[in-house]
Image (cartoon, rainbow, N blue to C red; front, side, top):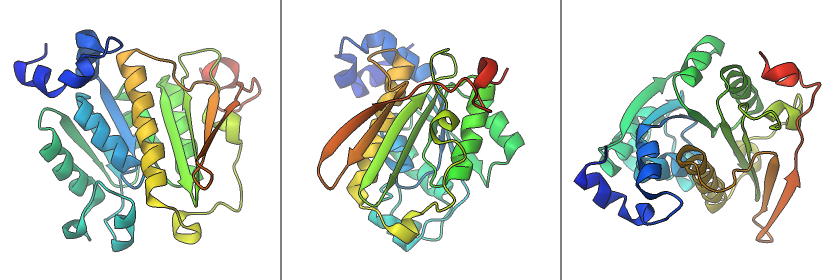
Length: 252
């Protein structure tokens, strides 16, 4: 049930017929894992907490650095040197004390990642490296949990939703295969702050759509963001029947 305080707090989104009381109840009952609390994870965590998602599991092994603050709006200057999970917990608790917060400190290995994914209803990959994205994808396929994946570098971003519950959905590996040997990071190539804010906000929106059951998620579609030209482009992505991760019955 929703309390009177929650009805007031979430009243503006409850007014939407696509969400209403039933959708808000589904959000309150939902458990979500956010992998990475940096540029993408910051808006994701803030918006999901503000929207009333009942339980947020926060995973990050890093500490807040001065160079993070240009884009990682979940953290602030006094948090420099503090674990990002701890900084995030404090900020989100202040934003919405109704939300339950679960810390996932330290790097997630294959076993702990599988356990973390199995404990939630949906996963948001806000990490910044291909190895983690591949591991998160494999865990989501194995547990049949929907995955909202985003990435941003320089002035370009991308976003997609992979849902192993659907037979027509590709997975991350279907799209990217074994990745690129010349993978760049933000520390090497740079990134503009509002771009990760935009992609992260879109990830949060996709998560709310999946959890509350409204709209058309980005399943089978890759959204490309060109920040330099302020343009969006969409590509259709099909499931690869020969995929080593989800091929042959989604890893079952």
